[in-house]
Length: 493
Image (cartoon, rainbow, N blue to C red; front, side, top):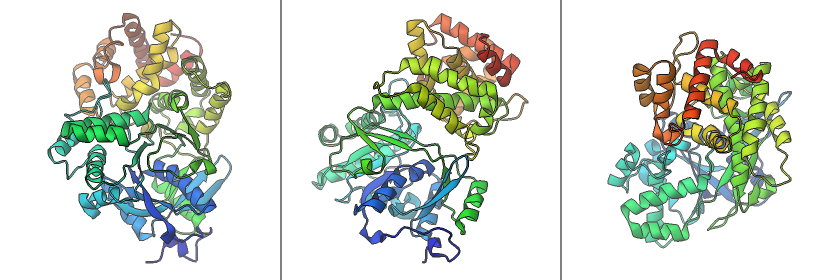
């Protein structure tokens, strides 16, 4: 079948290299929009500038939409378009770094495991979101009662979870005396490599402690920091790209021009030279990931909850309101930056101002609702870790408190006009139960704070913090989100 990128109406030139040169040395679990606009794009640029043969085998494990994406990629020879949308112009690229695309419904569990156990597979990278690691937020350990983990422990050779697939693939590689692979997490998690390592070792130990010991000795789990704003794909964005491209591409996606990738240089079976195309290899990713998680992701969540409640559909729309813009910058510089310890050459004021510009990009329709998803998984590392710093040193945390109160008001599942909010979160059933018994006031704050997986045991036991949060939540409910943000900028508690 001819690719759509050979169609005579195509307005840009497709890549020049022959895909036959590629070997599936990278197996990626979680072939979503972010990965295809970030890691796959770095690999594409490396292929364009060198004789590198590292191709990507894309794997989607879960959703029906993931199966459709794999089917569409196959129909267009595994190529797709990325539109980098700046404030004033859009640049199109046809990405051709993918060698193969798989889904359990199409290829079976055995097909996925074959890809993971090929001798040439040297890296298994992950963008499976926080919940894909199946860990407990309070302890960081693997949740052995998670339904997917329970299934995989009972049926380890036919797994469903990413963690189950990784362990079974490593078991088979050990049994067949094949070299191990590197597990490369590219999710927005603090110490994401450590999270992946803990989950994999926890699962392996539950099956076979000897296997866990082998993995601990032979497999590496580098930490990474990834950064690029990639809004969810919509019919409107695809129509816009089709008009610019000249053909319809069901796999097309849009993103901002900015991209960043910082990687701990710890690979057991080789790696591509991503530093040749803009990535940065370092010995310690932690300072960079904390900077990004707290200043970018933390302010993103603040804007998502309070922006949605304030009636804004996108982050760019939210940033048009001067009070939100001012509050986002103040959150970054007054309450997030003081919690960081960075190399001297990093200018946090410059970084914050760059983030404000990125958030304000009118070409990106990054929905507040999308960023608000899975808040129970994001809140601890984006806002609560910084909050603990301020509680320990006795400094002001009013912006953080309003962000947390915004999340609490958001998971009430109705907006300020009484319309329903579709709250997408692994703990949505817990929120529904709390909403039924404690829909308002201090009791609601107390009930949500009692969710140990989010807030631990220390925060609900801090009376000064609880009182501050209850007051902030009360003011948010009485005034509304816009007025609460405006009052925040005026120093009103």
